[in-house]
Length: 254
Image 1 (cartoon, rainbow, N blue to C red):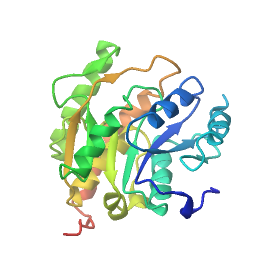
Image 2: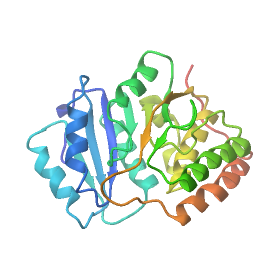
Image 3: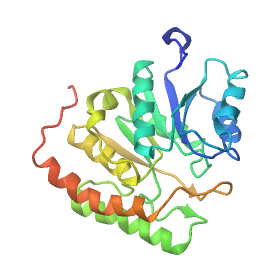
Image 4: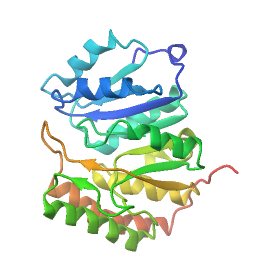
């Protein structure tokens, strides 16, 4: 991590975890940097054997001071990638910290709407939601749509979260949220990580808003979804809810 604190002047950063995303990474970086508002990018690469990190480092010459990378030694999981990214972004004093996939399943233009929800509409956490206004998913097999939709229903039932898309991975956090949440106590690594972050933010007293988006399944590269990731989400929420009964959460400053 060679970047110095003095080189960063923007208030927003997009965290993009990568593992074998060579087909997408340059295009997603350029799409974010072409937005009418300024967003920096931090790529967290898990030692992709396809050369994803090399593509990013080459682009750093073109986007000096705006494009950053953390390289990890192996495939350590989505959750730990985001935790590493959150800590980096806090250290570098960003005000708005985003989660986004590399594969264009999240439309970069929706970053503007997620930021507006936090900056202008009182949200502490804004979620790009596939299910807040119906089912807005394109190119998924029907079985996966049903599984995802009812997984969110199940999570709502178990946890009491009033969120339609509990496993969403397109999120904006105000820095205070990530400073308050005890990041080292976040346990889940797969899709349950997304549930745990939202649940913990709510338990800490933060305001969560859903912003309707259209989710488009990846065209290039391979999905990282697996049965193990899904089962972690199913059984993890029970442990999450049970554990919350015996835990005191730090609270949002009034």
